Length: 361
Image (cartoon, rainbow, N blue to C red; front, side, top):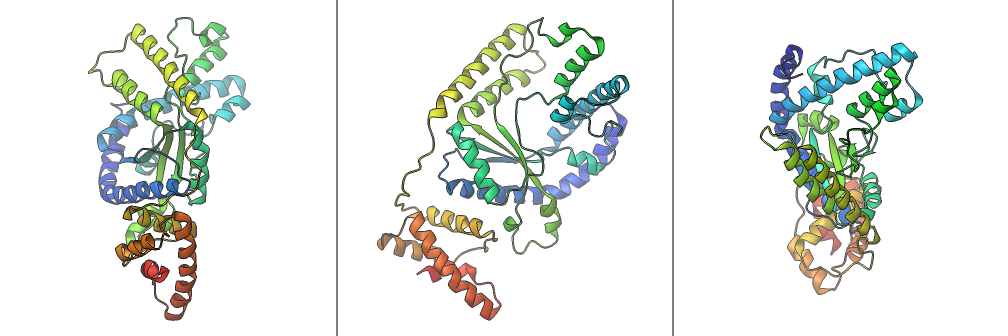
C-alpha cells in the first residue's frame, strides 16, 4: 500500500542500493541488448531493433505499492482457502499459488524488495512473424541464456484479480461470482507475448570487469518476445488505459478496446503463415556484418569477446575481393583460425584472440 510505513521505510533503504547499482545495470543491459541482436542473426530471425531499459526509480516506487497490495490480497485469499479446505488445490498449485502462504505479506528486507522486481532489467524482442518464437527460445538456450524463472505466456490466469474472483465463488458457493454477469470482463487476453526471466550469460562479462562482477553474476533480465502487431497495439492500448490523467476508461470504451484487442489477435494469427527466410546465406558488403559474425562465432564458443579486434577493415576488404563475404564461408575460415590461435595461446600463455581476423587471412 502506498501509505504503508514499512514499505516506505524499505524504499528509503533500497534507494541508495538502487542508485549505486544503476550504472552497472545499464552497462550490463546494453551488452545484453547488443548480444541478443547477434544471437537472433544466427538464425536470420527478423525483428525490429532490440528495445531495453532499466526500471526507473519512479516506476519502482509505484509498482512496489501495487505489488505490496497484491501480496496482501493474495495472502488473505490463500489463508482463507487453507483455513476452510486445509490445503491448496492441485489447480492452484499448477498456477503457482500456495507458495509461502505462511509468510508475511509485507516485503521484509530491501533484498526481498529488489528480488520482487524480476523486470528490473528488461528487453523486448519484437518479431515480424509469430512462428519465429520457437526459434527465439532455441537460440537463446544455445547462447547460454538460462531461465531464472519458468517461461510463461503473458495474458494468462496467473494474477491476483483472477485468484480473488475464483476464491470468492468457491468460498461463498455462488457460481454467479465466477461469471461475467455485468459484462465487464475482457473477452480477449490482450498483449500476447512470451515472458522469460534469464540469467546474464557469463561470456558477456567484460574481461576487465573486476569487483562489478558481483552485480553481473546475479543479474537477471526479463525478455519479452512478441510481434510487431502486438507491440504496436499494446503501446496504444496502454496509453489509452493508463495515461488518462485521472479519467477512468468507461465501460463502452473498455468494450471497444476489447474488440480491437480481438482484431490484433486475429491479425497475428493471420501472420502465422509466414516465417523468416531460411534460404542460402547471401553475400553482404557492410562491415557491420563482419562484426556480427565475429560475435556470433564467440557465442558458439561460449567465450567472452576481446575489447576490440584488429584489422577488421582490411580483412573485410580481402573477404569481399575473394568472394568469401558470406556467413557460412566466414565461419569455416574462423574455425580454422581459432584452432591456430589456440595453439599460439597455449604456447605463449597470452590472450591473442583479438588477432583472430588477421589469422583468418
